[in-house]
Image (tube, rainbow, N blue to C red; front, side):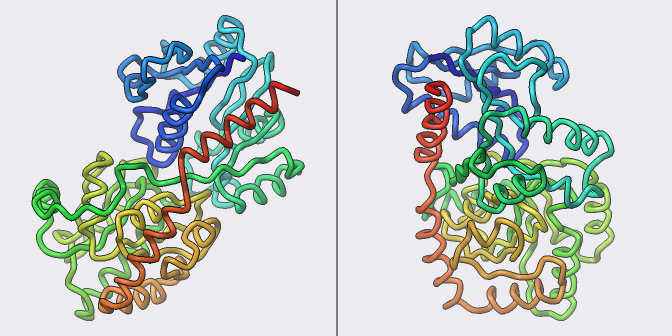
Length: 372
C-alpha cells in the first residue's frame, strides 16, 4: 500500500495550515506500520522538520519548484506514477490527472462567504480549484462539523464523503511555570508589564481592526492598562492593519512580533493575562485551543466553528460588535476568579483533542479507500 502526502506547506510559516500538516504527518510517521509513506516537500531543509524514527517505509521527495501550478500539473502526477501510489493526500487544489485514489483536505471555504477578504488572484484560484478538488476527491477531510456542513451545502456534496478530523494543540503548548523562561520571552519581544495576546496571520478575516478599536476605547476610558501583543506573519491585505495601529496614540503599546516559533509562542500564551481571538470566520480556530492548553483565559468570537472548538471553556463575543468585545474583555480581565475558572476549563477542554487520534482516523480513511 503506497500512500503519498503533499507536504509542501511544511516550513512556510503559514499558521494553522502548516500546523495541521506538520502534526498530522509526524503522527502518521509514528503510528504507520506496513504502509509505504511518500512525503513531498518544498526542499530538503523543510523535510527535516519531520522525524521518521529511522523507519524504512517513510520516503521523502522534494519539489524542484515553488510554483503551485507546476507542482499540481507536473510534479505530483509524476510522483503518482513514479512511486506507484495507491492514494495521494492533497491540499486544497486538485491534480491534473486522477490515476489513484485521492483524499483532499479543505479546512474551510471562507472565500465563498467573504470574497473581499482575499486578493483577486487568491480568490480566483480558490473559486476555480477548490470546488474542483471537492468533486475530484474520493474523500474530503475537514476540521470541524461546521466546515463539513458548509462544504456539503455549498458544493452539493454527499455529507458521507466528508470526514471530520479535528485539530489539536501540539505538545509544546502546555502550562509552563519556569519564571526565568517566562520573563526571558517578554524581554525578547520587548514587552514591559502585563499584556493581552492575540495570535493569527495578518489578514482581514482575523478582524484585528475591531480589536484595535476596542483596545483604544478601553485605554481612553482607563478601563485597562495592559499592552496588546499581536503575533502573526504578514499574510495579505495587511497594510491597513499596521496603519490603524501606528496612527493610534497607543502605538507603542501595540506590539507586533511577526511569526513566532512554537516554543516562544507557548511562553507568550502562558504569560498573557488573557487571550483574545476576534476572527469572523474559522474552519477550526487553532489559537484558542493552544491558548487553553497553556492555561490562558480565552475570550473569542461566537461564530462559525469557534464555539464548537471552545465548548464552555471560553467567553464568547459578537466579533462584529466593538462594544461587545470591549465589555467581554473588561469583565474578564478584571475578574481574577473568572480568569482562574477559564484557565481550568480551558486546560480540560484542550485535552479532549489529540493529534494521535487525528492521524489514526486519517489512516483509517486511507485504508478504507484503498481497500475498496
